[in-house]
Image (tube, rainbow, N blue to C red; front, side, top):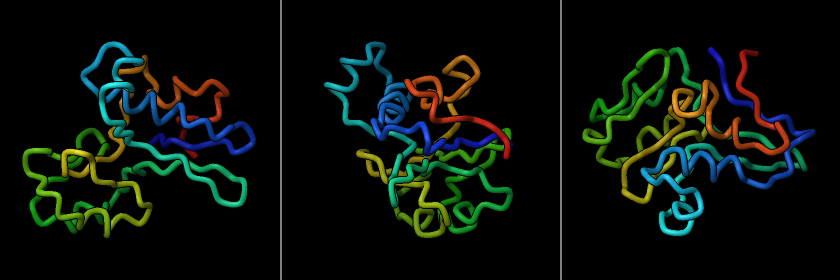
Length: 142
């Protein structure tokens, strides 16, 4: 399965991928308006350690610990992608504790969120990949 990776040689730490992610997952049609008026809830994070940038996003594990830990059964697998049912999620944070990658985080609405691979919304590539001005984020199998 393809995953999102950051090429640390090209990443400038601009966090535009996070903004593109937040915009693609909002109901807004204008990016400036969305980022101005709507709390930013990206489903990807770019972090830095020792001058190396890396993406924190869901790896869509084959045997996901987050699903095993969810007491409400709010997580499921659809076409290889782990999805969170917002109606079932009670915000208990068990999935956050179970995820070995730190890829699940609370949203402003109190329910959990994670990368759902928005490849259908961005011309075959996730919004973070499409929106990176330096082409530092790639979507590939490794």
